[in-house]
Image 1: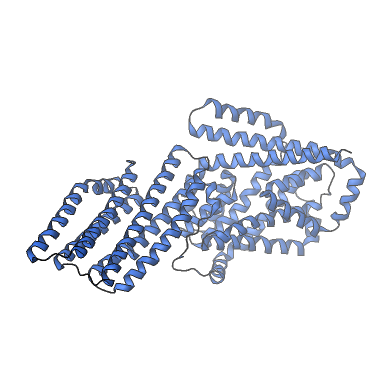
Image 2: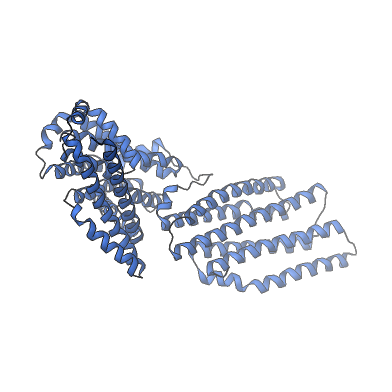
Length: 535
């Protein structure tokens, strides 16, 4: 038998199937993600609703990963509690089984129709939503076609006595099939691909019907592992959700193996043909898992809080690369992290200039500014790398504009941090050389620093809330600030003339402080210009 041809055909079929899953998921996510986020946040006030929303969201977006990303974001933003989020996650597990239920029909014959309609929508329509719908339909067509290729490739194996004899020895060791299923699902990142392959192996006679139990259980556990691994670089809320998901499936799989004999006797009573029975087994397993854990979600969430206790504030920004699959959510999260960094700059840098001018806690203020500048540099690189990765995705024009705005604001923020750190160095030099500012000059600088701090806050608020009126207000004040800068310099020289003394070193440092403060103001104005798209 030409095993090479079989392997090539199988790999090609799996590849087409996975690409179809990818196209369908991406198209449906872009169409539905914002609405799904809205529904998840609004309709999860009890466990049953959360479960139902999880089912619907995962089915329409064709991705339990997308659902979990949205849920983690809502938990991080305190829109959902952890126990509400876990209800949605249980629902997402059931939602993935609906796709398998559809694929259990004889769908191969419709592949060409969906591919044709999808191509027509993509090529001949201009509306973005229709193009995305076309992408999803093309993906469905590839899904159906891939199933046909897999089935035709494996069919000869069902008639090969030597291969069947080889497989029989593993059928009697369910745990081996279970492990193979876990590994395959982990590699494919798709429980649906594993179960579709299982259906084909059973219907072509390569595997016995009872073998599907171990494969279905392995596919369910295997689907949780990529989420668990990727959560290591995620937020604490992401870790809690991923760990809970893994524990739900691990406990359910353990119970299923304990009751393995009962399942073997009962699986034949599931309605439908072989493919439908396997799909039903997959659905029943997830429905029963939800039924077991739904009543105790509050207690599970408390357990997660003990295992991974919440912290007031994470010092290191963590941006989950899974967010890149959902550009809108990725942009929202990046913007939120930029806003967090801007608050740190205000609190630990700009605001520390005021006690410096008042000769209070000198070294403490300088240490805070220097530490904050190092933190900002680190956060800047993390967010920058994330945004550049996001820019490599297939973004719409609107998403691309938002990404560019985030990059501009992030760059301005980093420059402001450098400038404030430079101001701290000027103060350090003056302290070391025992240079004292004129009291009148000091009061004017103090008033100016308060004013610039206020402008900074307005600009960042305008960015965070997309407040165009506030951004215009900052830009319209530019002329006033230019006048103030000239007045400060003029007043400084007047003070020197009135006191009939001139210290060139003190004067040079004073003028440098004025220039650096106004550089902070200029970057604040640039942030407001970015909000308005004037860049």
